[in-house]
Length: 189
Image 1 (cartoon, rainbow, N blue to C red):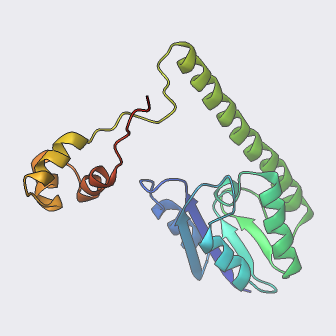
Image 2: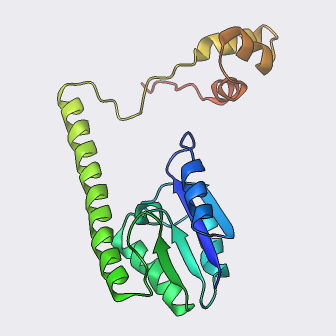
Image 3: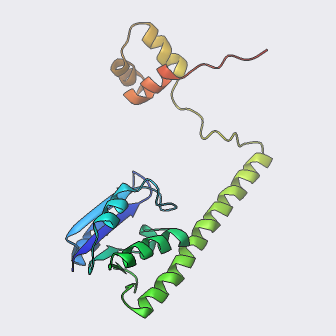
């Protein structure tokens, strides 16, 4: 029986160290990790690799089930896939072990709460957007750009390269490239 660890965080600025250490301490010989949203399994290649590779008698180990899935449907699909392969799911911080009846029941309960939490977060976000629209402060296009596009273009037209422009304005080269490639909107009459 092999233990395969899976660690996930939602954003690139979050750290996976604590999860990786917990999975190593649990005896995982292979640990795959990724920085992706847990609201869907689509695009989560490391999870897909583990689910393809795992075999009979093996266990997929996570620190908490919300690291694996935030919807009941995705969680049930993962558990079904593991069961079909003769593998189980375990969590280091929760009493989840799908090889036992109690572990399966606890998994189902936690899955319901994880989905509930996701739905509450979405509702709060929509309420905040509605309030911002009422107050006239929501444009629906994210935050205002912090890159002075016209200044970037001006410096570029004067012969400066992207690296020099980035250094002059204190922005990244990628921001310079985006500003140079951004289309200027022509008002329709």
